[in-house]
Image (cartoon, rainbow, N blue to C red; front, side, top):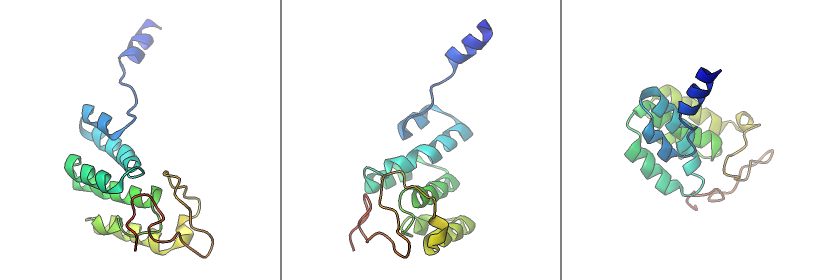
Length: 132
């Protein structure tokens, strides 16, 4: 029992922001970045994009972040898909955007408006999205 308490006390707290990822190494850092960076896009997409480019060294992790941002923040726009380098990930991202039925059940993490049946949110209606 005391060994379990010691292990529990020594374990690191769960990351709560992208900044916490810097304290991790290797795959743990990459996993953290993939989970935490998309949340930063809710407040300021331009700043979050710059942070990803500055802090995420692995191209595959960046591609995953752009895909997650598309799914979780703005599933009706190909803005983030265009940044994906890996052809397979980019094709999947593009297919989600172009096929609204794949967006069903997606709840944007930023509280962004969801597409209504037969329609999509107006350009610029999502946080950090440029107005057209």
